[in-house]
Amino acid sequence: MSRRPLIGLTLDCEAAGGWSRLPWYALRQNYFSAVAAAGGLPVALPHEPALALEYLDRLDGLLVTGGAFDVDPALWSDPPLPPHPRLVLKPGRTDFELAATRAALARDMPVLGICGGQQLLAVALGASLYQHIPDEAPSPIAHEQPNPRTEPGHAVEIAPGTLLARLTGCLSMAVNSAHHQAVREAGPGLVVNARAPDGLIEGIEAPARRFALGVQWHPEYAVDPADPRIIRGFVEACGG
Image (cartoon, rainbow, N blue to C red; front, side):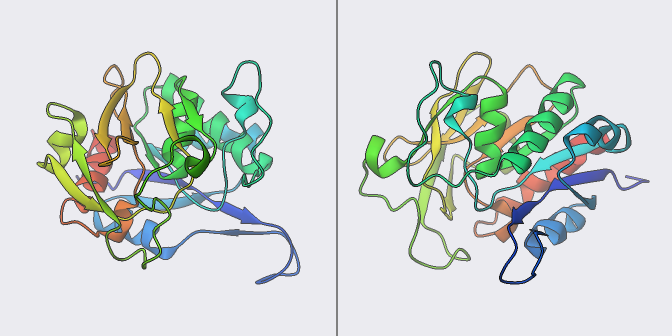
């Protein structure tokens, strides 16, 4: 690529306290370094829903990150379900990410969703979620793994013939796991590309789009040798 594609990364946010006396944004460094290593030029996107279209006018791709947040069931359930007590809702973040994601999809701009970003991408494409896995889909697998995120938590099986299979060159991967929500039903136009051993959906994609891919794990950690191939494939799609 003669020019690095400009990749917008969404940010997490926290109320005043801890690091700052004022509300603050945050994102782990390995998100940015993974995109840069894959050939992209990463930039951070503050939560300004009214500016989402202006951001996208300048971007080549959108990466919706994970973090300490959940997707409000009012956005995907009909009639709206009451939020589970374990949910962490951040309306400012979600409003911006939904606006940016929907606008990117409307432009057929490449979108990669990671962990909570995968769930948000899925909701933008009509999916439903489990609000809290232990209550709605009990499993012997610890989807919020107790060991460090730099280590695998469990394996996933990848569906043959999917974009994810082509990017990784694998039909199974070792992944880290840090979530209590998950995609329940993929919805129209979405393909499930990966599942955990307990059957839980771990990845989705939209074949009709140029590149719309979500994975429940964190490939920016490069826990599996195939993880960097996911981000590299995304960046290459942004430069195509």
